[in-house]
Amino acid sequence: MPVGPARMPLLDHLSELRRRLTIIVACVLVTTCIIYMASPTLIQLLIDPVREFMPDGGKLYVTTALGGFTLRFKVAAFFAIIACCPIIIFQVLGFFMPALKPSEQKWVMPTVAAMVFLFFFGMVFCYFIILQATFGWMLDQTVDFAAIFANAEDYINIIMLLELGFGAAFELPLVIFYLSIFHLVPYKDLRGNWRAIYVGLLIASAMVTPDASPVTMFLMFGAVIVLYEASLFVARRVLIARDGKESLKWTRDEYAEHKFNED
Figure 1 (cartoon, helix red, strand yellow):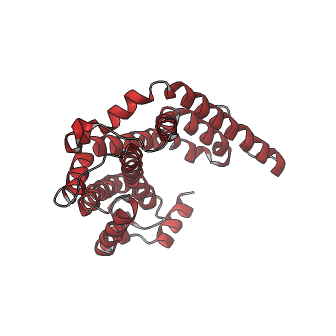
Figure 2 (spheres, helix red, strand yellow):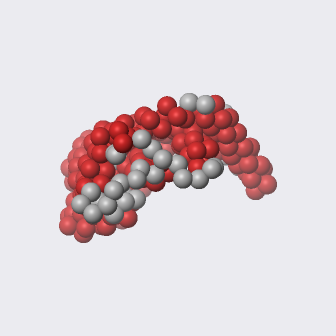
Figure 3 (cartoon, one colour):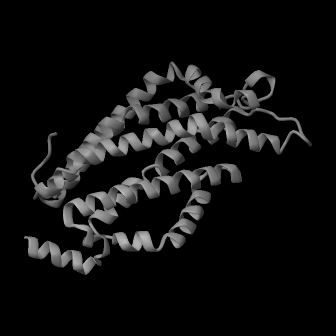
């Protein structure tokens, strides 16, 4: 991975940042233009999980002259960003890598791999499990008093927001893992304050989900609780293997003292 020197003048840093941002934007725009041609197929792919809940056999309707173009471009940009994830991560890491110590750089590639896996796992989980439950509940609230009009932009926007929301939420294990093994938040606090953390995760689930469906909120809450507990389990194993079982009870100061003595 090409990286610059660790120390550069401020203007050189800004120039390096601009260069990498230009590469990212150019790649996303070019990919968006290419994917735009296949966007009708991708739109059908997005609505497949919820087609059975839609009227008229899953037919979508556009209500404005520019609606079709706007929707196709939005979907193309959505898939372009996903497709360009390796390039985006590559450029971001290339900018920040010089600031990391050699001992920290060894964590970079495993972290990137975990980030990509968890994000895509969250999106797949949403696509195959969440979308049906969410749209089934939401549309069921309407059928008793009104006819459903499948506005294309409304449906696709909700689906894409749900996909991104679950992809982002599934990064939680990585955050918890690093907070605990570097004792930014000691393991004993994360384990001992589980009630308050569960309430915080419930509130976060309500804020992240783009619809007003309690079904979506509680499904996300259940998923992040499982991920939270899994990340603590892995962190516990790493801490015990690295520093011994007593490290599970360390405070931040005790961890800092241990690192100082170790160095």
